[in-house]
Image 1 (tube, rainbow, N blue to C red):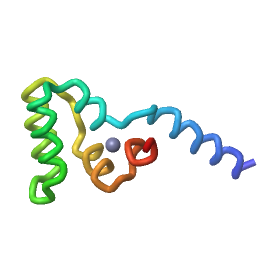
Image 2 (cartoon, rainbow, N blue to C red):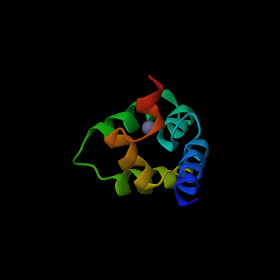
Image 3 (cartoon, rainbow, N blue to C red):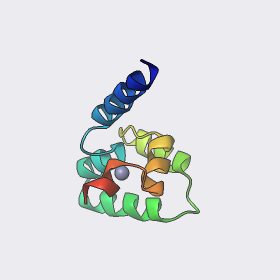
Length: 82
Ligand SMILES: [Zn+2]
């Protein structure tokens, strides 16, 4: 049944996302000073997700611009968890 297959796909999507999004994971891995900077950068709409992603990759943190965009929209598990 096609509709059931979609439901399974949606459930699989949720499972794959896990309890926290990529942004939350990186925030948890950073030093407090860096964490504050990243939070400021995410809140600053002038800074693009790509800029943040590139700067983080230089520090060995992998975070996709797409993940940052999702987090900014509140379309991630951070918004749903609280
Ligand atoms: Zn998030």
